[in-house]
Image 1 (spheres, one colour):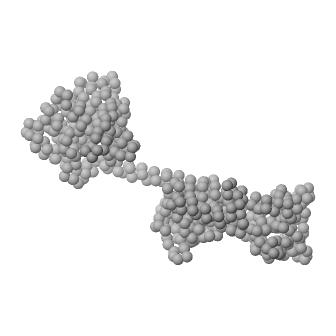
Image 2: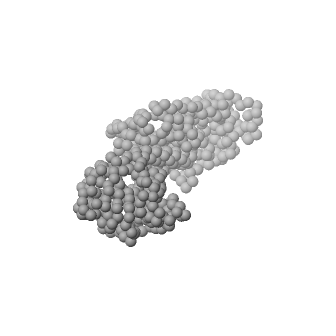
Image 3: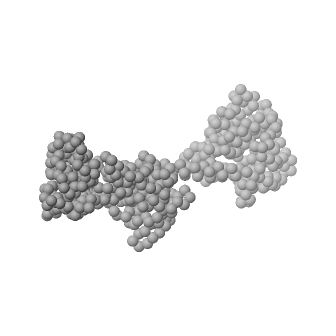
Length: 524
């Protein structure tokens, strides 16, 4: 076992395995802890399960184990002895034959089933699941047309008798210790040819591994081929009680026939993070219904985890984006390496500005100065701005290395243009190369940069195109901070600008091809 899982499933029957397989197929880490006590173990076969009709309970579980393993789920034979809340998750104590360990689980799916409590009649328990039966949909076909007795333990017996009458014409009710039917019920039984036999049943008798009948206290033997009992279906809820959940009684025809753990239709309980499925929540569920409930619970748990994963990702994203654009983050980034950029001017700047008449230029986010120095060498009076003092110091050093004349055309400004935007109409060229910010601050900054362009001047914006991120590559920039040229162009008024927007491919020295979003706009 690992130390932690997305989901621990307690109980390895149809509900638990179905939920576990669904979760494993959703790429969740899943541990199934199975105590090996399936409710249907005494039964010879599973029925009414489309595609699995007649399979033995063991065959169904064996196939479920293989499917779970195929998708990376884990199964351990053991028992969960305790579970406790730990933040949004749980600490689960798992006792196996060789060890007891604690594992963490983000969510719990409890499918511990129920215990069929049988009437205390000698010889009855030994035949349960063979010819002592409880469900006509599970066993009715196999005893069709045979002599079937209903052992009455309460008012539900009359309903059982009417129901089993569909499978056989020979139905008798053994009144045992139940009240006599009222006049209305006696009429219904008589109309269907169902006989009522008075007297307590003191033994279930069998010979040669088959039921032969029941012995009454009077000594009479009532010959039968099968005996139907109404079990008291008690939810295995000890673990859930550790988590603060309680069972509620299940009633039928005014008789308490069992207990269950309440949940919503998806299996979610009142304890956040805990789901139930199968007979622990629905005592009447057959195998196929339990499996369906497990699937639904598994799918809902996965959706709940997706919501939690997204919430955590958003919080981390907000924190990272809150700090990554501030001065301290950029100072640390520049200090970490002696040179952060190549020292060459950006290709799209060279392509667009080479033919422009020099004037006043603003280089936004000038970094170590390559773009600003390239412009100054061609006669531009350049203001290079950046929020990093380390970057500006390197830029000034590179400018001095470029020569006195070039350096004399450069002004370096430690400015955050989000807070101190440039004066309107003050530059003939405003260039922002790969300036990536969250959408709203980026749009506000680009609007301020557009306002800073003088009539007849040029606005040049270049950024990483989101298609590179979409295709699985691209730079380490968050997707929502990338932009297409069309998105940038849409914020410019065509009445004021002559706009050219396009996506351009660019090949890196390592052979990788990236795509730049390029907007060139001339103010009218």
